[in-house]
Length: 188
Image (cartoon, rainbow, N blue to C red; front, side, top):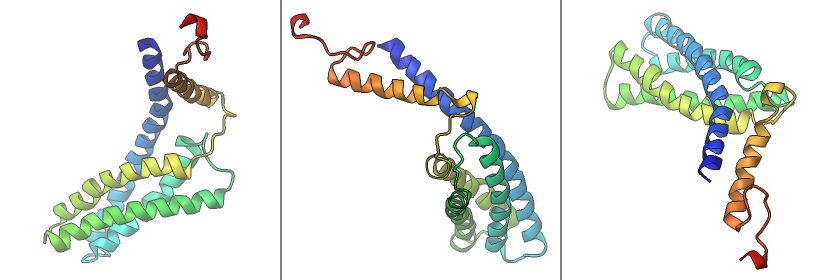
């Protein structure tokens, strides 16, 4: 039982680790793009319009993120319908944009913090962390949710999940986890 539980935990961890690590790398580059564009905009062309500067920076970083996540992080889950995927991605990023811009708005208009470091921290640290958590789960479960096992690297993902589900179902029903068979009346 403990071995089965440990195997399930290791299987699920390896299943998500690939995606989390790649999502983190893409997110790191997107963070640099988002932050650089945000600082440039609110220090220059959009001085005084920090909320809009954050929104534009998020849009630029999101375009990079969609391409990188589609063709690298979630390439085994990308949808055949590119338009549907792009629309879902845009909707989820709109929510992420609202989270990040909302943090800048809250800092500027509620907390009355108008200095550049405070607004940067509100948008590109707090807002980006909250938005990133939302985006990972949104991308993983809604946007890039196709199960394409054509690539050998991902061909056993279903088996890991099915083993977990089968073992759980069998243990709850009283079946033998190794064979999936129920005990006979004479063995009871």
